[in-house]
Image 1 (cartoon, rainbow, N blue to C red):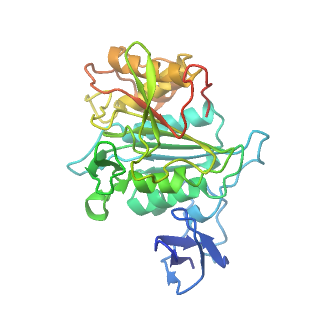
Image 2 (image 1 turned 180 degrees about the vertical axis):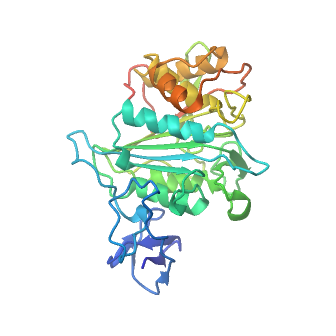
Length: 367
């Protein structure tokens, strides 16, 4: 049976792996020894009809462990390190907040990572409302646990990816660490009852713990997502491709960078903008404009540098091509989505943020 313990320093709930005598908090890095553990209901018995990316199920007499306490099985580490990803597609199905393209975005992103960038399927955690496993629903708790898992035990050479497609929002910041006075947020399925996930927590969970040699990319297709990872620098680029790095380090002096690793985020729009679906025709043909433009930039050969990627993404959204072309987008969407076309008139500009400044036109892009 799994145990839940509170961090001895910041009181964050932590799931204790079976047999462990202590655990390090992903938020404040304090080490907590076992004390007054609280039992957590075990997950339902393994069903052969459910799809699991984690290690093979135990015998029926053994309770299946929580997936987020264990590194996925897969091939031995390559000389270039391990690849690991968390993909969230939140459609808010059957609610007044329902979105059309988010689950399609998640499927497209997984297809891209597996087929273009050789991420092992066993190292990708998918969170969508389509999942039958309760641990794979994009609730606030499951998203938190997935983000903890993403960085847990990462080593130099590892490549990590976090993709989110869903609602984003803002809330008033009272600590003085936001340039515009607002925190950016991501909305899980249960945000109306459990609350949103705030950029400060995202930063503390998957940015600050990154050790030297580890690379994290976030692809965030949501409204108000420009600085949703709270990274210190934003690439402010005009329509001619000229750019400068805007300093978003908090005036309070709180460190929002990494522990030596590299964190870079592509987001769907600026903090004061909203993001769009590529089509309002039906739930079948829709995808997020930002996710679509990200994949198109790679498929059309623009994924050479970060500057070329950002320019290509913005151009795709501004020009709104007719039809879905490009290898991965075509093959995946033909199979899954039966075709579709982009609607025109999107008013959003994808953004690039990073933990350190760099020359966007000379730094090679890679996942």
